Image 1 (cartoon, rainbow, N blue to C red):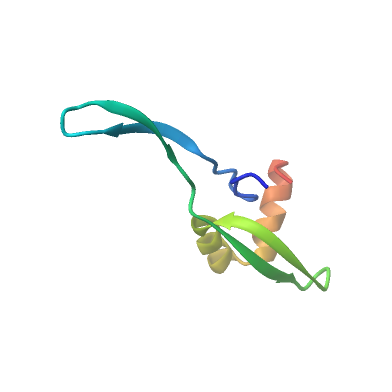
Image 2: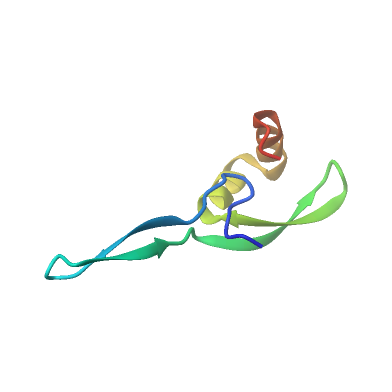
Length: 77
């Protein structure tokens, strides 16, 4: 599975390693992703999601139901 956050859509970015002599080589910046299980009381079931840690903070603040509702309104899921 790709390294993409299922809620925010964060994904890999490309940039440069810059040495002391200013020589540049390509590198990758990976998002900080975790796999987490959530219980959704409305549907009475567990779901497993690959999310970024910033999305986890949002879920802790607003709740999983509110975040899922917001994402469905945007059309991401």
